[in-house]
Image (cartoon, rainbow, N blue to C red):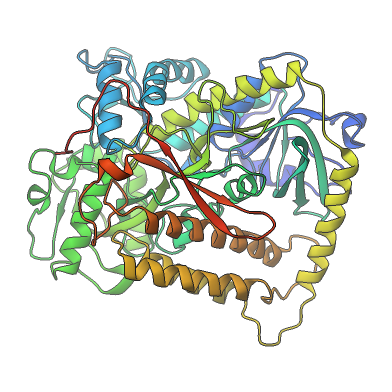
Length: 615
């Protein structure tokens, strides 16, 4: 590892290294002091990345290749604790290493078909052309791929794909990717501002000032000036709270901050429910399980997927498999009750030695959280909110730019759109690499050709306003207002039961009204802690506000889209409607009134005309 730090020292001492910082200063994970002029705010960051997942760190690396630029990554956790580390199956890209018949055109078509033709095909072509290159880049950086006998990395076939194109490391691909990128970031002298939660993007008219953040260790409100920022904060799965595979940090912070400065939330209704989360708690059991040979059976022992996808069976797209499981449960062939009802995933067709070699984490998760040894018995699973195909609109996929000058987006918090209405397995890690790289290049180019145009006076003013907000919110007395957890629990019940795997007009309308009522409750809710050091109650208050806005956008988009497509399934409109809905939803929020409005944008069609999707 670079900078004289051993891997063991880093892994064992990372938490201890993040010591408390003095007021108004920044903390660097690479051990170098931030220049005094930066601490004082006299010099801005050229590129400030928000989020330390795969997209954020790949973007930072790309930007840092431009010598002379000041690049930093800010994260509300510690580096390497992002949702990207939880990705299991691998990263897609055409290399023809395992399957010589694979091609860019095949990857492109599989992605577009899998996305139920809501993908922008020019963006998908760019993605498919560059995904394989990024797999080789990761190999050069030291990613520990599983290897074939010839020494080349091995690739496996994931759901919805015609060829084996997912390169991987066991079932811990995301973990390996993030640590590989982090080592490279340290080697390139990138600053890490850890345990700082973004509160707001500060603007002065059309010009970017920087970011307002709270340092969790001191409670200080920081104004961090930047020429450009890259929003790479991940998804919003915690809108479904206990029925999600996402970490507790996936609360849509970047999407809300972007919406609040005028970037539209594109296709918010397109939420992916992964078919195989543990029934006990929603934790993901990788799609690579089914790629390796695990099968799905109901309580009667019947392997049921042939009824829903005769050719692909368990390796149909995620939306199809998730709806099949939900249908089995609803029709009385599931196990358990309520929010934890499910079916079985049976790993016994897979040799135990292969499970240990390629699915070690899946075995461990099943044993730890469900008490099941998957080499000996089937494990209860059910759909779990897994991924957001929607996100902040990326206005230019060649640069990663949004429609707001100086702000770039990448990763799950963005919408390019290459995933359309349903993301294929192992396309997410490839996407964060391709478009993280693109956004880093784009932001660096902007920073090199533009002077800082923001106002640090306005940045200071916004900091002062947030200090006042903190004092007001945390010093509220407990009267009739609900607590943050009470509002959050009500939100989750609304989202899971009325805007989940299956949707209809009645339940979505009820959800909209319930969310409006919860937003009113939130405006005077009780937090209960006015301390400054690691005030997690205040952080959860901020995150709940973000989740309520995200949830409202999901419901508004779902109400307006009167069709079924990919992850969006309307029982009252069961057919796909290309005549009226072959278009993207754009949800805006008016900053003054707080009202939401929708616009629409045509899907880009280049090579492949929409057809009925069959598997």
